[in-house]
Amino acid sequence: MIGKISKKEVEKIAKLARLELSDKEVDTYAQQLSAILGYVDQLQEVDTKNVEITSQVTGLSNIMREDVVESFDNSEELVKMAPENQDNLIKVKAVFE
Amino acid sequence: MDIQKLTIKSAKRALESKEFSCVDLVSAVFERIREHDGNVKAFLTLCESEAMREAEQVDAKISRNESLRVLEGIPIAVKDVIATKGVRTTAASKILEQYIPPYDATIVRKLKDAGAIIIGKTNCDEFAHGASTENSAFGPSHNPWDLSRSPGGSSGGSAAALSAGFCIAALGTDTGGSTRQPGGWCNLYGLRPTYGRISRYGLISMTSSTDTPGIFAKTAEDTALLLSVLAGQDKMDATTLPAKMDDYASHLERSLKGIKIGLPKEFFEHTEDPESAEVISQAIAKLEELGAQIKHVSLPHTKYGVSVYYIITPSEVSSNLGRFDGIRYGHRSQDASNLFETYTKTRGQNFGSESKRRIMLGTYALSSGYYDAYYKKAQKVRTVITKEVEKVLNDVDLLITPVSPHVAIKLGEKNDDPLAMYLEDIYMSTAALSGVPGLSIPAGFAHNMPVGLQIMGKQLDEASVLSVAHQYEKATDWTEKFPLL
Image 1: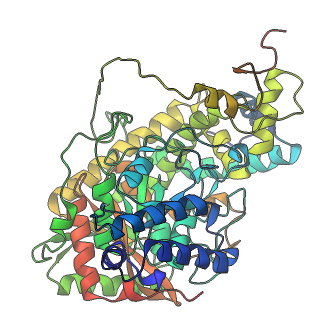
Image 2 (image 1 turned 135 degrees about the horizontal axis):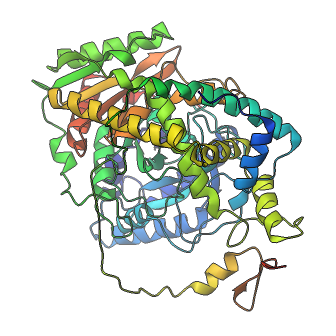
Image 3 (image 1 turned 180 degrees about the horizontal axis):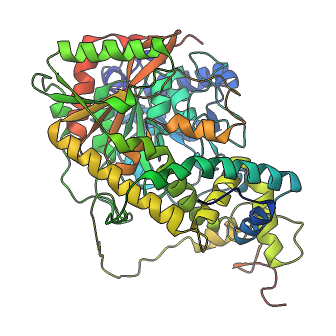
């Protein structure tokens, strides 16, 4: 059904996934992804008409809890974990240019 | 003391009877790690000073004749995808090389509440992506039974640490076989519980719909004990099950008489290694001798398990690894000239090749135009497999299969063929996809390497799985064999 993956497609997926790949990686992944998808193509043999998808394997649904705020007293530590921070804020590059 | 031979039970008894002190025990553990971990490479981070301090406190309690909690003073190793407050947790990835979690995973908190001493964080495949630990950004771990071989993966560091005598039990995770397979390759018990039996809170998410914590132990009894400590509903993980917990230890002495064990023929058709297959046949004959009733059954759709798994897993991986973008934690690339490049360069420079491969595969499978053909189809075939397993487990109590078609692979043997590595999960994906418990148990040796047998049970029936393991253990002496370092 779905054929081999081209280098152009690999580049498109990499952009969607926010991954910078080298030219060599693009080549390698084009081949490897094609091989893996070729293998999983065997799934098309299985008749899944009228079969529901698995969304929760143990059958739990709608697990609710009280909507109460719990305080976390270590928020400064969380900000400190960020690669760059200033005045208890996380520093990032400009979102709007 | 010989740490390799100590179980939780025997170590606890020795501490209580003052045969040795907890400081003696923990010092011996670190001495052994210093002597041998340069070759085994089981650990990424050690917690020696904290562990020694805790050991002193345990000794103080013992000297005051206070009673000890269930795991008090027991040195335990923890896989590095499990959050430990204040202790570096890398997921064996460069992107989290300096990450120090501000909280404990529920299972770590439960270990601490039971008195366990965490001695360090173990190596694994990056973000648990792999079956050999070769995908670790910090280099592979080595199998103590033969250092040129892999201890399995992804929880290979935990298995190697326990087998080498660097701890008395260890935590892993099992998404598609990552505890059971290394257990089998290292002559250990490796338990994947029912999905939702043990909380996932604080596990660095990989495939949320199949991830579960895993237990490594040297005996079925220790496995049962750890399961009792770790299992239970957790408000921090909405998928944990409300069902009442069994008293696992109390079922261990249940006789095998009349127990119906199914052998799914699809798991016995390809005898890649006749010596391993012979070990499995003998183990099954032993179970029959002990009174189990062996039935031949069929799970025809399980042959699609690896295909289903390698669509669902990369899809969920691509989503779960989206959070590693260089903003809130981990490394951030310094070469970026705008926000978009912060993302792409941080991720491109810091993820290893297998993690990138899974992100790519998953992004593709979930992308517009392909979602129905791949992800949705895989989730439907997953339903077919789950129903098939459920139906067969109505006719038999348990299922038995090999853990692996062969003994531990040589390091480097399959590392450049991702598809061949994925097929290492061939006997493992069924339990992962259908949510049932699976336990690998030591079943003998082929080519002087351990061979594991897998026992799968009905959802929430860990008790039966463990009792069969315990009865088999009593009738054999595999757990009394240890690798020489």
